[in-house]
Image 1 (tube, rainbow, N blue to C red):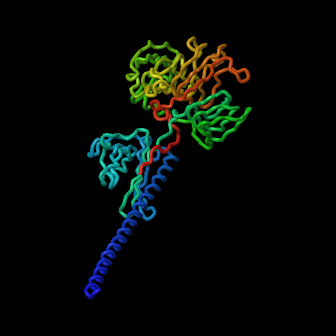
Image 2: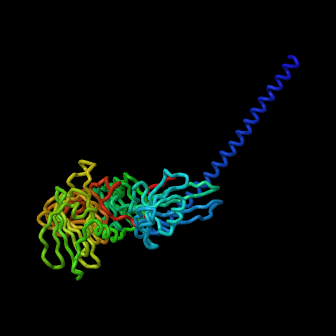
Image 3: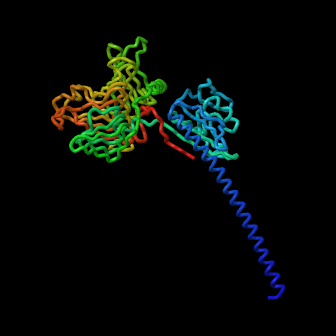
Length: 478
């Protein structure tokens, strides 16, 4: 090769090396930039997740917590947490940026929160009045986002983690687990599940679960204090699994249901302010109407009145204050009936006086929208009368007896025929009540218990049906 060719070859290789060297340096710099950006984003994300967990723990410990955090230094960055907790205090809807709707310091303001750098993740929140100025300063505005109000029973945690001018937002939604999701729930079990018993839906005992023989559980079974198997053979069947150490206190606050009934439902009470008891009779009709009558104290029952259920209780809650409820019929619509005792002995009970069913049976048509909750501060009973004795009885409802149990009156248990009590729904109670008399392991009078869990209650529940004391995470969005 001649001298010129050699020179050209050297120049060509030199040019290639310069180009590739520049490209290599660019790739190295770009890689460092990418790594740096990834590191910053990861740090901001981890800070936001840590803040969300800290806030969630506060809500677990105190369901009314809504203090949040503001610009707290953490791991080289900082975090802020805003808590939308409608259950903590009064909510005031804010209609415009003019500040209308601001209430007392303890009230909540409705605001559309727009996360920095992520306007698509905007969310309607209920925040303390003291937190509002800071939100308005970074672009949030009063009122709901796009007309979508926040849920009245959902606690939302908005955790923002910032590192090196990069902010990541984590949303956590929490809600009290609803008791209606249980097929059976008991504070204690004194009548043990035994051979021949079959239980559908989730089953929980907030004590030790004792089984006798081979009862069959189709849903998941949980217990606070473990399992004791007895009988011959001691082999309960858990088709949905068994878990111990699960503590779910049987308690609820009736004030929420009372407020819902007063706001958009129906409250039956003594309006003479003499603290007389109030008994109420309800007969649901397939037409969507309900016939009701009431008795104040020892007085006469009022003349029956028939109105649409949607007119009597638009929000679905029928609340009887210091009294008992007598109910039967065909429910077309959604309702929750509450019987409170307010310290009066012999009240706070619900008596089923005849079949109580849905207009559309969910076992036949799963899209049925008919739904009923029975909530008694004391007991829920099948009443002894000509409609019940010697007859099979149907009940479609999720039933909740806070301080008592659910079952037939004693005269029905001792009535000399053996019939069936067919339930579609759930039984939540302080304890279990026997439904029949037995000779050995065979019932011979009373009612055989036939239970079907209403699977709809896993996703949808009767209006304002009681929630568990503690919250659970229902959504975690990053």
